[in-house]
Structure formats: C-alpha cells, structure tokens
Image 1 (cartoon, rainbow, N blue to C red):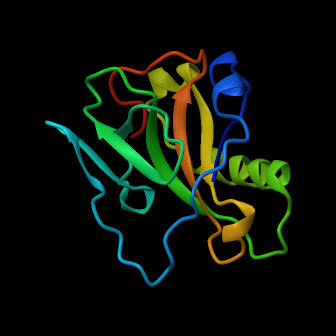
Image 2 (image 1 turned 90 degrees about the horizontal axis):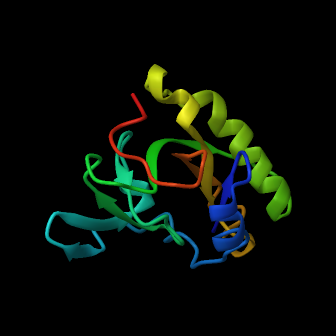
Length: 152
C-alpha cells in the first residue's frame, strides 16, 4: 500500500512517498475494529471508513486511526475507486490511475475546496490484482492539518 498526493507537498513527498505496508486482508475476511488507541480515538481497517471520517496521523497502512473532525487531522476519507482489472501497472502508474479515478468522485464542501488535494491509499504489488481498491482521501494542499469537515 502506498499513499500518493495529486499534487506534491513537502510534507508527504519526503515522509510517505513509496512507503510499503502489509496488504489488505483477504476478501473472505470480515473487517473488524483494530482497537481503541486512546479514549475517543478508534483504529479500523480502511474498508470500514465512511465518507467524512477524519484520520490522524496520515495512514501508513490500511489500519487507519479515526479522530474527531473538530480536532486537527491529517486527512478526511471521501470514497473508494476500484482500479480496472489489468496486469500490475507499476506503482507510479497505479498511483496515477487511482488519483485520476478518485478526483472526480470527491465531493468537497465548496468553500473549503481550495484548501485540499487528493491522496490515495492503494494496494501493493503483492496484493494485486486481488485487491484493486483505492481509498480516496482529502488532504491539506499545504501539507498542514485540517480542522473541520471538507467532504460533503
């Protein structure tokens, strides 16, 4: 799994570009709560996300930490995009396919649109082609943090 932005930011370019993580669970597995991290904070599998869920810190795997959107957070989940079935396209091509698939599906709060860009969580080569789901995230365009909702 890797995380990529639609536009490069210094924050993520150095911190997360090309990071690899464990593949998503087998399709026969039922997603379950990973566990409570601290009171009021919950860690779940990305497949359990709902539009408008806020995440902090930026996920490095498909285990994501939910936080209140009223607190500073790294990203807000918007939707998913299933990359078309094909041979492994390579990490850069997969990132591009996922961002291009996510971008038109993102529904932003109009007055907040200029603050954000698209980032994606995508499967790695070992998970391909069984897992082709990209998780579409709204992230701060300036590499900072969000406060409040940016997704409708």
